Length: 192
Image 1 (cartoon, helix red, strand yellow):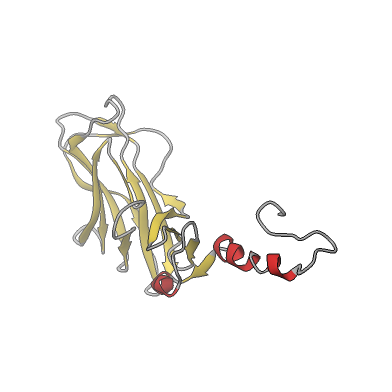
Image 2 (cartoon, rainbow, N blue to C red):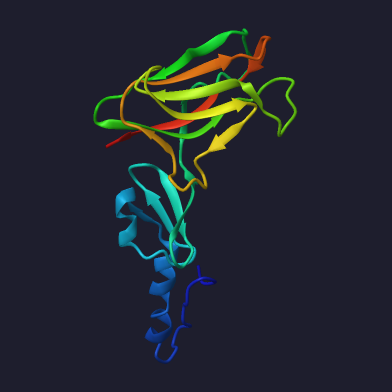
């Protein structure tokens, strides 16, 4: 602690002056915790951390604005950990459903659809993993093509957010052949 903060030697004349430098350093080192909507109430000093207690978003100050670094998230489902074979001809086939109460919302922080036999960096537009708010007939929140990954980190709007339950995850396969896919969704259920 003495490396980051000023600690005067015993018997130092005007010992209080070097100690007065410490609050500025502490201000940068101590994380701010508040609701995301209140972020503008805090100065985004260089390196300062802001944790949004309602959305689990993590921001760091760059001296002028808060920059989204990511989300503290837990997997709620959809990641079965191994490849699942999906036959050709599926059209928005429901594979998972998130149900939450009216005073909650769901935020998708990451979605991926790794495919067996597809080279890294390549995608298959005929195979999709899609998330719908309000059921299959509802609003499309986010979609990835086979072997694609999308993350809320770095997005201007942050996570994909849903307030209408259920949120449905569906697979479409129009590739002309069966495919092996690992559907992955990382999400948080948060109180409004």
